[in-house]
Image (tube, rainbow, N blue to C red; front, side, top):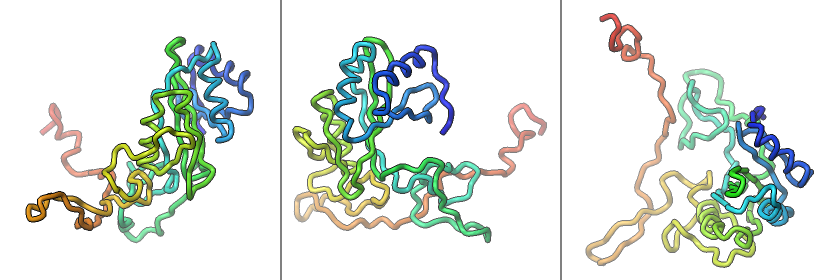
Length: 244
C-alpha cells in the first residue's frame, strides 16, 4: 500500500493508538494524511468503546458509517487511459478490444479478506482529530456485525442505510429496517451484482387509480466510463490565444 504522510499531531495520535490497542487495531496506510485501522469483528465493540472513552483519544462522535462490497474490486472492462485499475466500471457488456489480447480481469493490488466491510468515520470534538475504522464481515452469504448504536446513537440511521443498500445485518440494532428504498423492495441496490437498471419500475395507472409495479423495460447497455478524444478540438494551436 502507499506510504501515508501524516502531520506531527497525527503521528502522535498514531503512537497513542498503537500503544493502547496493540495488535487489536491494524494500521492501514492507503489514505494520505489520515489514520485508518482495521479491526476484527469480535473486537469491534470493545475497541469502539475505548476509542470513545479514552481521554487522549476522545472519539465521541460517529460522523458516518458506510458499507463496502469488494466483490468486483480491481476489475476493468475497458482499455482506456483513464480507466481505474482499482475500481469497477459496472458495464453490462465489455467493450471490444480491437483485436488485442483478451481483457485481463486481474486481481487488484489489495486483496480484501471478505466481500463485505463496514467503515466507521470517527471525530473527536475535544481534540479535533479524525480516524477511520474498517471491519470485514466474516460471512459473505449473510454479512453481520455487532451494532454500535449503544456507543454512538448516530449509528442508528447509518446502520439502517448499510442494511438497506448492502444487506449487511447489525446484531442488536433496535429497529433494523429499510430506510431509503420503497416498501416491499427486493434486493440491495449497492451490491455489485444488483442490475444497474434494477428489477422493476413503477408508474401511475389511471385505470386502477394507483401506482403499479412492472418488470423493468429499460434495455441494458454498455456504459463507457471515460472517453479520451484526440481530435482537432484539443490541438494546442487552436485554443484561445493560439495561432489560427
